[in-house]
Structure formats: structure tokens, C-alpha cells
Length: 341
Image 1 (cartoon, rainbow, N blue to C red):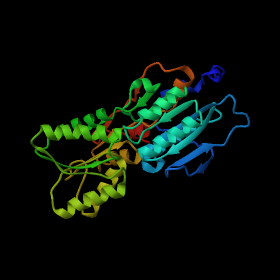
Image 2: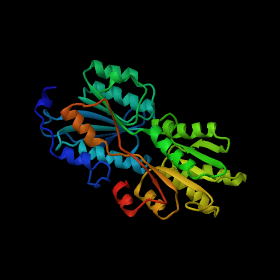
Image 3: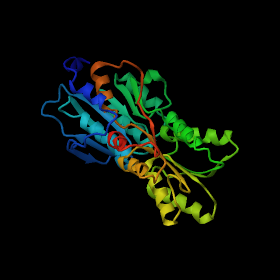
Image 4: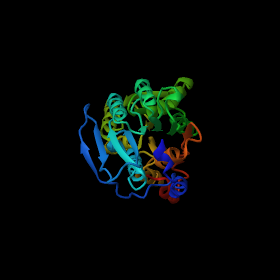
């Protein structure tokens, strides 16, 4: 691409990547106009620069920023990076529905973007549009989530290891040495890589251990309100449980609301162990206070990595974000400050 030869790598990239494990500084995103695309999703497009001939044209497909604190941070990071000042003409599309995202990708291909950046709502169904992009000379970069497609169809993938996140959480839970594990399992959007990875580890453990059982396993689709309803239904049924394994912080928060309403204790040394994922600042504060027990990190700050790949080329096919889990027994105030989103 001729215009890429005109671009100089930004001196801020190295610093941004070094800070990628700490929370973003919440700067104001570039103002955007909003239009309703076919299919019901939401598209935002940055106002065109007076002369955009040298700008790199990118179409960014993401999940709804209101889905969770993680997603809000992820979207903010992308918008703060893919700006006109940094050399980009960026358009954004949001949906939690895979078919709507695929339709948006097809539209971006028709619009002849230079790069297509995708955080897929679901793992399947992407082959066709990625093949169209490849034929059109459009490079694809995956972020946040993996998809079931041949690696030849995308330039690079900057993602979390969702299976590892689940394994770390389940290993921590097993280390608590309970005589019996009766788990309320609240799942995210079914078919997403986050749900598949985090569910898979727990499912495998339950299948392998006779003293582990699932009281209920339902999707709340990342919603705190739905998670509260799921837990309330279990409480109303009279079935006993001692673990809530929620696949994001918002659902854990909703689950805890149901426990509080029923005066059921939770957290360190209490009746119910609480596990969440994403490491929102407020969730880590709950750990610090002993109200929750464990939170698995999911790092949302991928934009600097993508920016570097676009301007300097991909050095490796897959970049796995560095992530860890936090235990209420060992978390510190510095952890909350440095890792909370």
C-alpha cells in the first residue's frame, strides 16, 4: 500500500504497549456521527479529514460498548488510537449478533477499506467475508476474540486466551479444597470465544470430579439483571449451592445482588464463593473488601498492538495478551490501581 510508505511509526507506540496492562486514561473519544445500518446494529464514523488521501481507512467491528465495563474500555482504547491525528479514517460498527457483524464486514469490503478489524460476536460463519476481503486486498486483523477460520485469511490475531482464563479460575477454585462444589454457572453470550473458553474449563472439571456438580447452567448474555434472575430462581427453588461462577463481572454483580436480597453471605470465609472475570476496578474493590473471592483478568487494551502491526507489519501471527487472576486473599490496592479497568 503506497500510502503506508508515507507513514512514520509513532514514537508513542512503544510507550502505549508498555502501558497496555494498566487502565486507560479515559480521554475523550473523537466526536462521531451515528447512523442505523441495515440489520439493527450501530455504526459510527469519524468526521472526514479535509484531505484524507494519506489516511489509512479501517473498518472496526466490535461488540456493543454497553455490554460490560471490559467492552467500554476496549472501545475507548480503539477510538483513542484510530484517530485522524494518528493517521486513520476509522468507521465503527457495533452488534452482539454475529450475522449483523458479518453483514457489516461485507459492507466495509464494498467500501474498500484498507484494514478490517474484527472482534467477533461468534466464532463461526466468517470464512466467506474474509475470503472476499482477501480477494479485494483488504487485510484483516482479529482482536479480543478468536474465530473458526483458516489463519491464511487474516493478517494477525491479538486476543486473550479465554481457555487459559477459565483454567486458571477453575484451578484456583479447586485449590480451595471444598468437600463439595455445588456451582451456579452463569454463562456469557453462547458461541463467543469468551463463553467457550470459560465454560470449557468448568465443564471439564465437573466431568472429572465426583464432588463437583452444576446446580444450574444458564446464559445471562453478560447481563447483570438476567444473572440476578437466574440466581434468584435457584434460591426460590430451595436448592443448595456454594459457588457462583459468572463469566464476567457484571453477571457476578447481578448474582451477588440476589444473594444480598436473600441475606446469603458471600466472599472470603462466607457461605458462597464468588468468581467473576474482566477485572473492572469496582470488581477488584469487591475482592479487596473480601466480598468476592476471585476475578480473572481479561486485558482490553489491544489497540496499540494493532496500530503497530498496521504501520510496521506483523511480527507474529497470534499475540496473546498477558493476563492473570486475582485472589481476595492476596490482592493489594496497587493491583486495583494498576489492573482495574
